[in-house]
Amino acid sequence: MSAKSSVAPFEPKHMKLSILTAALQELTPREKRDADPDLAIEEWLEFAREIGAPNIQLSAALHPTQADVPAEAMLDPVANTLDLREPFNKQRAARVQAAMRATGVGLSDLAYFDNMLTADETERRKKHEFMLRVFDAAVLLETDAVCGFVGRNPKLEMDENLEMFEAVFIPLLKEAKARGLTYRVEQCPMPGWNVLDRWHNNIAYAPGPWIVLHRICEKHGVGDQFRIHYDPSHAILMGQDSRSIFQYLKDEGYNFLIAGFHVKGQVIDARGVSAWGYGGQTMQRGDWIDGKPSPEPADQANAWKKQTVLCEHELPGTARHDPLAYLQNRTVDWLDHQLAARELLAIDPANTYLVVEHEYPKARIQDKEKLAPILKGSLAFTKAIDEAAAAMYALQHEVLPAQGIPVQGIGREAYRS
Image (cartoon, rainbow, N blue to C red; front, top):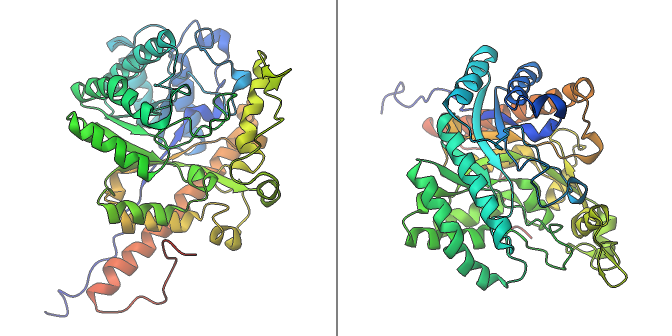
C-alpha cells in the first residue's frame, strides 16, 4: 500500500439538530391560534430561526377541549402546535412550506405522544383517528417519520398488552406503511400516566420489549415501520446507560432499531433514591383521597411522584458537569452518548436527527423573551457536543487506523459494574 493510499481524510459527520415545539406551548396566544391554527406553526418556525434551530419536530396533540387528560394532571403538558381539529390539507401544507422556505427552518418529523393502547375503546378510537390525521399531515409536509408512544392498557398485564398491541397497534403501522412512513417510538415508561401502582405504562420502554414488539411487527410485514426514537433521560430513570443499551442491541442484532434521538437528560437525586429507590414513591402520594383515586386533576398529577421524587428532567447543558454522576448512571454523559451512537448503532450520522426536548421544570417558561436565550444555549451545547463526538470518531475510527496508529486508552465500557 502506498503512503498516499494509507491516508484517510478527516471528515467528521455531524447529526442534524432539531427542537420539539412543545418547548414553548403557547408561543402564539390561544385566542389567535384557535382562530388561525397554522399561525402557531409559522410563529414557531420564526422562533426556531431566532434561537438557532435549523429544524423543528412539529408537535401535535388533541386540542385541550378534546383531550381526555387535563393539563393539570400532566408532568410535561403537550402542545398542539399542529392543530388537527380540521384535517390538514394541501392548502395548509403549502402555507407551512412557504413559512419553512422563508425562515430557512426545516422539519425533522411530526410528534404525537399519547396512549395508543388506552383501555377506553371510545377514547382509543379517537386517538387512533387523530394519529391517522398526523400521518396524513406528515405526508403532505414531506417528512418520512412520526414520533410517538405505544402506551399500555393498565387493566391488562404485560403479556396481555402484547396481544392488544398485535390487535390494535399493528393496524396503525399498516396505515403508516401505506403512506411510506416510519413510526418512531419514544421509550418513556410513563410511570405517572395513571394513579395506579403501575410503573411501566408504555410497553416499549427498553431494548428487551423493543425486540419482542419488533418480532410481532415482522410477522405482520411492518417491521420496517417500527423504530425507536431514543431518549437517554428515560434510560437514566431506569438505571441504564446508553452505551450498554446500544451494545446490547448490537449483540442481539437489533442495533438498526434506533433511528432518531431526543436530546433530554435526567438528573438523579441520590436522596430520593435513598428514600424510595428507583420505583419512586409508592404510597401516600396524594393521588388517592379517602381511599380512592382523587377526581381532581391536580391531585392526579401526584402520581408522577413515582418518578419525580428521585429525579428531574435536564435540558441539555443546564446540569453541572459531573463525571461521578456519569459513572453512576445518574445523569447523561452527552459526549459518550454521541460517541456510542456512532460506534455501536447502525445509523448514518449525517442523516440522523438530534431533537432537543425541553422539559426541565424550573425553566419551562411560557415567555418567549425569557425562554429564547435558554433554548439558544441548549441548542448550542447540543451542536458543540455532537461536533466534538464527530471529530473524535473520525479521528479514532478513520484517520488513525488508516495509518496504523493505535488509539490511546480504553474508554468507557458497556456492562461495567
